[in-house]
Amino acid sequence: MNTSATSPGFVAVVIDPAFGLGLASDERCWTVETDSTAASLAALAKLDAELRPRWVWWGRETTQLLAEELVPLDRCWDVQAVHRLLYGGWRASSAEAWAVVHGLSVDSIPQMGQLGLLDIPVDEGDPEQPVRPDGHLRPEWTSGGWRSTPHRLTQWASLALEAARLQQEQFSDLPDPARAESTARSESAAELLCAEMAATGLPLDVPEALRLIEGAAGPRPTSYADEDAIRAVRDQVVLSHLGAQLSLNLRNPADVKTMLNHAGFDLPDTKAWRLEELRESSPLINAFLRWRKAERIATTYGYRWLDEHVHDGRLRGDWSSSDGAAGRMTASAGLHNLPTVMRPIVRADDGFVFVRADLGQIEPRVLAAVSGDDAFISAAQGDDLYQPVADRLRVSRAIAKLAVLGAMYGATTGESANALAGLKTNFPVAMGMLERAAEAGKRGDDVFTSGGRRIRMWSAPPSDENPGSGPATDPAGGSADRIEQAQSDAASRGRYARNAMIQGAAAEFFKVWAITVRRQIRPFNARIVLCLHDELLVHSPADAAEEVAEIVGNAVNEAAHYWSPDKRVRYLADVSVIHRWSEAK
DNA sequence: ATCGTAGGCGCC
DNA sequence: AAAGGGCGCCTACGAT
Image (cartoon, rainbow, N blue to C red; front, side, top):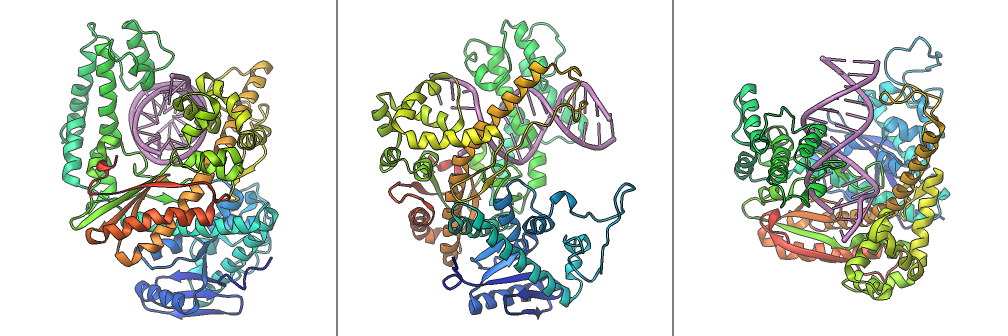
């Protein structure tokens, strides 16, 4: 099927800050010479308005430049992001994407530098050509050589174009090529959004952050000795509950187990949820749990974190539009796991507010949509999905919720597993879809999300291959153990595949929502500053808050229209206008 | 010294 | 109510 009549044509672009733009379309290659990055980006924006193409670029090196100046582009094709969609996993270099679309093994990708003694010398051909005789991209080019001359810029752009065309062709192998291609477009725009979030940063109230850190971790240490002393004071609060002068390290779980043993508690591990139940009955455990909270802030979100990741009142980290598992966004620098107690420090600038929104019950709703289970879809038509499920199963809402979540996560024991039988009889289509994914995973077969993302499975390494791997375990490796291990690996792959169908589909929906918001809030000078799996935080001028909030809410319906395989499923967003992140419900 | 793994916890 | 899926980041520790 040819969609080129209705969709904009590809134009590939590479940007060299010193020189200008290298461009390639199906008809021609050309350059736009400029004397600065700003001029290059201005020229690009002008071309975008004139040609209205779908921009093709290799990946990060381009999106980073665009994001720094916030160039307002929307339609794009990010070869590295599309590669992750097609191929799965984290690896996403240009050389890798190139190799895969050309059917070359990624293991044969040439590296820069000396030839190893055992390497078979290959014909490297003409260094002026970006593609080697063996078909791989020349490493000297991928590592920056592409920008050394104007001619090379256009060559490099035409290769990006070729890679994109080949990626497009590869979608024809998927069950729904048109849908996968639309995922490729939204994933590409999400990558651009990620680059913008990395450049913009999350506004932080630094004085408040310092107060909070001091409360948990004590004053900023002035020396290593001082740091030790402060730590000792923190530890002493817990250790003082132990009558004897036991020498133990609270940061060593084995020591903690010993400590609890002495106090009369025999526990398999020291996980917080397990200790939580004993909190009331033991001042020691209570003190220890409080210690762990403080220790978390002191070590992960303390002064070092502030110094390393917060500058000019902005918390900045790397953003990736799709992690290696199911395609959720990831972020570093604590952007995705800031403790709730620290959320008050996320504060809008003066004259600005946050428009915050989260999707309600998104995972079961996408399960309804991607499975096409009529009974489940009908449960997903109202504001609450779990109550209708509970009514059908004749159980409480709490049990129904537990069962649905358990079905998506692959729970095997407890209450949720008990209720699973009810789900299977009442929602056979949805449960069957999950079951099939789990079976494929157990076999080691890749599975695909609704939008066409490959979920790559792994298999247990053959145990006689590398006998010495792993920590000093029994070299004999009893075969019963091995079988048990293989079964446990298979079960683990089953849960992984099962969950990836849901987590991945929810991530696809979320990204369509986010990029829709990104595009529509631009005229109001508002920006997305945080994406958290089902939650969006928009930094908006205060006087535009109402309009931005309306856009964010409406964009859910647009995302549903664009993405959802079933239009009857209802998607909900809770939207609020706040000054600090902690004001969210 | 440096590396990989395990246990743990933060968020969803 | 039970403890299942994902990620990043911390410390401790054993192997190299």
